[in-house]
Image (cartoon, rainbow, N blue to C red):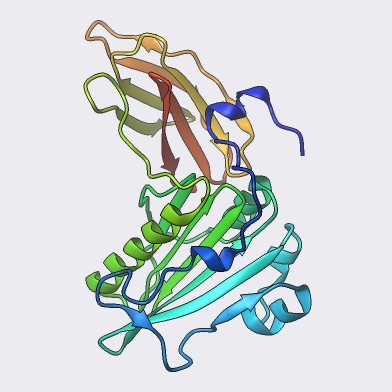
Length: 258
């Protein structure tokens, strides 16, 4: 798949060197209070071929196999009779990992947990949480056994621990001379109205879809108070990201699916 040159605005290149996804799995105790499961609440092990993937995911293998699956690592962690299941997939290239992320979306309610290239916490399920994120060519899926604040925080902590082990691991960070960049997005009729507060006069904005393709590059105009703003036609249904480059760093905000 070919991409527009501005993609380097959004994504860092993968560092060289082969590394199995098993190396990204946290150890027992790495997230405080959680130990590696002793019961079979979650699948555990490394899956390195398509024949293994079908029984492991119980009918859900096609979304990965059709998008460049290389290998997957699985583990479960327990705390106080609750458990968290983790799946880490190498999809070969970032486009494929983002495509898996887009395919597995569709819930009514998400929280952005600000991890790696793109992330979300599914808060719509009645009895558990599901957190997934993409870091370069890797797609990570985390689920909890119950819907409690403790398990929610545990899932986020595991996501951060996994991301930190990855070659391109990075956490979102505020940018700008003042140490922060504020961005608001609202939909008005058929327009998206975006406002950005940053002292960087060279700030640039892009609307990107879930596959990484740039859908719009509107010019930012300055208000009298120094706030930058842009309006653009609202895109069709799908998952999108608004990315602002300011002082050489990128701040991304996920748009709700609509």
